[in-house]
Length: 208
Length: 254
Image (tube, rainbow over all chains, first blue to last red; front, side):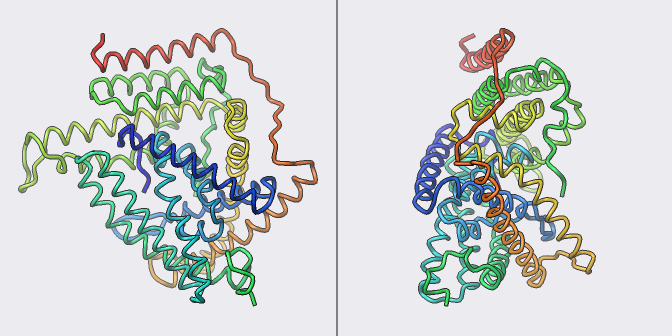
C-alpha cells in the first residue's frame, strides 16, 4: 500500500526525499561500475515498465483485491538499480493512476526500495550457500513484503499517535500479499533459472 | 487493464493550458507541497475549493477528472472511516461500545481533504500538458538526465507492455484460465511475469542496439524550446500569492 498525500508530517516527508535522492545517486554510481550508463538506461526503463504492468495485476482475495508489488523480485533481477526503478515506478503510479501521493513519493520509495536492496543481497548470499533458487527466491519475495509492511507501519506510527490503529490494520492484508508474492517470486525465479538464467545474479561458478 | 490516458484533453485551450510547462510544474508542485501540510480544516477546505476553481479554469471535462480522481480517493477513504474510531478524545456518540470522537472525525476529514486537493492539482497539472512536453521540461529544470530518460522510456514502454500483457492474458483466458488465490494460479502468474521479464530483457537489448546505432550516448538532446511570457509570470505570481495568503491565514497573521 502507498501512503497518500496529507497523512504524514513534513519531517517524515523530508526524510523520505533525502534518503531517496542519496540512494538513487549511489545506485547510478554502482551501475556505472557495471557498464556505461547508456547501456543501463534502456534496461532499467524496460524493466521498470514491466514491473509497473505486473503491479497492475489484481488478485481477488475475498473480501478485497490485492495487487502485486514484486519489490523482492525487482531487487533480485536489478540489484542496486532496483531503487531508482521503484522510484520511477512510483512516480508513474502517482502521476498516471493517482495511487499514492506526490509528496510521499520519497518515503514510499524508501518503503519498497530498501527491502528490494536487502532481498538482492539475501539472494546472492543464499545462492552462494547453495540453496535451491526457487526456495531462496520465495524467501526473498516474502521477506521484501514483510520489511515493507514493517516500514509502512513504523512510518504511520511516527506520523502521530492518531494513526496507530491504521498501522495495525495495514498489517493484515499485507500478510496475505506476503504469501502470494513469495509463491509468485519462487515461480518466477524457477522460470528464469530455466529460460534465461543470466537475468539472475548468480556467480559464474554457479552456472555450470 | 486500461491505458493511463492522463493527457487526453491536453489539446484544449485555456489559461492553464497556455501556462509555460516549466513554470506550471514548479508552481503546482509548490502549491501541492504547501497545501498538504495545512493543519486547519477550514483552510484545508478553502484550498480544496481553490484547486477546484483552477480545475474549472482548465476546462477539462469534470466527468473525466472525477473518474481519474476515484482511485486516489479510494486510497484515503479508509482514513475517513477508521480515524473517527481510532483517535481518542471528546466522544461525539458511541455505537455498540465503539466511540466516535470529535478529534477522530476532524483528522479523518482533514486527511481526506488534503489528499483530494493534492490529487486535483496534480491532475490539472498533468492533464493540461502533453506528457512528452512535461518530461522535456524536466530536462530544462535540471533534473538529472538519467532519471528523466528512464522516466520517459518507462512511460513509453508501459503502453507496450500493457498491450503485450493483454495479449498473453487473452491467450490464457481463452484456454480456460481463471485467476484465483491458489497455488496453481499463482505459479501460472509467476510464469507470465517471468515471460514478461524475458521478453522485456530481449526488447531492452534490441532497444539499446537501435539507440546506440543512432548515436545515443546517454546524453539528452531536445528540440523543444520554451519561452516565458508576461502572462506566465503573472500566473506564477497569482498562484504563489494565493498559497502565501492561505499560509498566512493559517498562522493567523491575517
